[in-house]
Image (cartoon, helix red, strand yellow):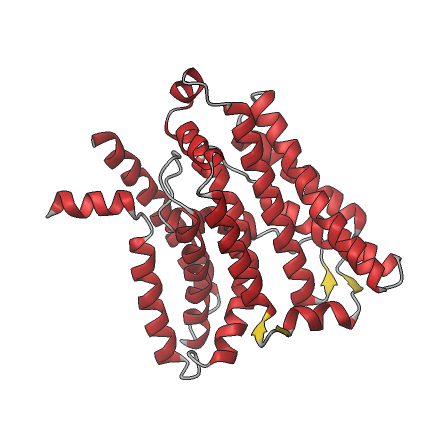
Length: 320
């Protein structure tokens, strides 16, 4: 029985996250009777979506046994750049298109910088991305020293609206899941897991390790950019500090979802569940009317538990 559970945990590392997610949904439904209503559920998805997007990108980096501590700063950079471009060009349809395009490009450029430093220059991932995160955060403050500037109503109304009767935020989440599903069926994804499992063995068997790690950071930058765009739609303004908390939250969500920090084991599904778990915990704290100071304490305990779980999972993999 024990070996069966262990095997199931290796094949489906997100199962524990799914159980926790369901438990939190029940608790939220008890504390908030309207929790299961479609409008409330959509509002929760909109609130949790940026964190989920950053967590998706972080997953690819962690699967390669790397980490991206600049993800939140990339979100901030994209947020302020998009708002500045849209407002600077007069808030027209063309300015919105230009802002969205440039925002995606900025995210990819930031991801490329991280990937080149880590994969080709062979800098330590944790130190490199911590340093680039400081640079990106500084650039965001240079572009927009303080929160402000507005996007035209067409932008945030479209984000808060529906397409074919389905809320836009749900379309975005479904598109992200579909994209991740396609990636999971590519040779790149298999090479990514091989790199995270044993980078030396992967290199010796012909896996283009450097290229794989670079692509992982590009995906992290892409999804951080999408999160930045989502926050523009959510807040309708720019804020150079808006992504600060998302870096640690994304790593926590990834590990809560069953992805091992040592690489190879895990996937996007668990990371999305992990992001929603963190959001639901905040809801529980709010609706249970617990002191606001408890939020930081509980978040910290969750991070410790998630890291401990990652260590246990890594040891279990070594034993098998």
